[in-house]
Image 1: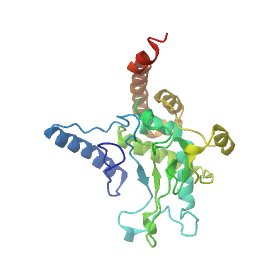
Image 2: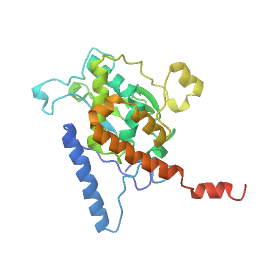
Image 3: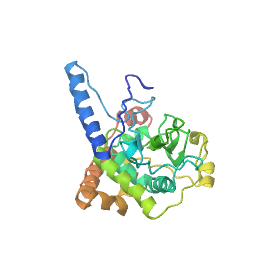
Image 4: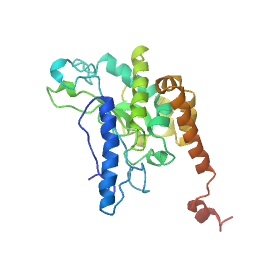
Length: 264
């Protein structure tokens, strides 16, 4: 059981990206079918309820072998303070660089940005850390002697995304960091939710998009993700999201009527 009412955490065993995508899609269909048989509805909506934690799809990533006897995890460097190889550090730097545009793929709904707000264990700030769950990317602690389990966790995807597109875009962002040997900024272990705007500016820590509209703008100008997804899929994704955003921003909500109708 997770934090919110009726919320549960589901973990998949590690595997290749495509296999993990298959598992995610299959699980959603199976769970919905079983729930329906019992007169219930299982939802993967990122933020169905206000005032409580939303539902994320944290993705753990490494360059390793399913069978560890075949070789070493390429993210490992036991001499590094965080146990990370240069390749892993460049990979993280790439995902941080493209994080705002990535949101257009991995947090694809208007509702996704109801989840990505401070205070509900969801990332808002583009930074990395080990124990800090307010950071966008976390390096989970591993058991002694189990270095092949070294991995990084991207915390902003949510389960409304297409996992195949999400993993493709995430890999492209990380690979851009590796190919261009992007330097990785120092980790931020402080609670980012307590940072003021001045703190963020002084530390040069960007924020994720606050709305789907902002995410679309970032995605539209990102050539790395466009190349990874291909022009057709990239443009159809932008079209679908723009239609969703346009419909939302012209819709008058109950909240607006309750707040403004009698006042003005």
